[in-house]
Amino acid sequence: MGRFMTEIERTHGLSLAGYDDLLRWSIEAPDAFWGSVWTHFGLGDDPGTVLIDDSMPGARWFPDARLNWAEWCLRLEGRGADDIAIISRSQTRERTTLTVAQLRDAVARAQGGLARLGIGRGDRVAAYLPNVPEAVIGVLACASLGAIWTSCAPEFGIRSVIDRF
Image (cartoon, rainbow, N blue to C red; front, side, top):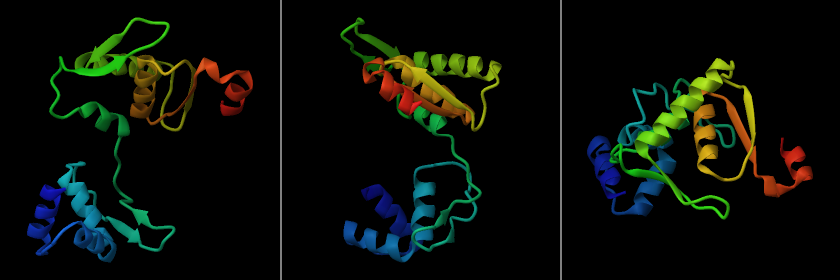
């Protein structure tokens, strides 16, 4: 937060005494604030227009920008390929881990399989599985293709699963 505030002071010629000043500025200049968030966190190339309509509710933010949630999840900045990304514990399985490299590889393989099946933007994928690493891999693979993911654990019961799917 401190680095962000310092950057905002420098780039916008502000003097912020603390969080309350930052909050006030974010409300008074939402397009400048959110443009600064985009830049500070390196969300990608220039997003173009930040705010088209500032009416609340109904504001339209970053109308020309596109981000892929899965890509951002898999960036894992500051993490090496051999660092642990997922630790899984279960009553029915041994403790397992996935490294950053293993997670990225598994997501890429799942993505390739889904793409070969014709899954793409706006398609829906439903999975009947517990909260296990395969669920994380599935949601990231679907999101990377622009598909919509839903899952339901077996312990939900038949009626809940049917209602959810």
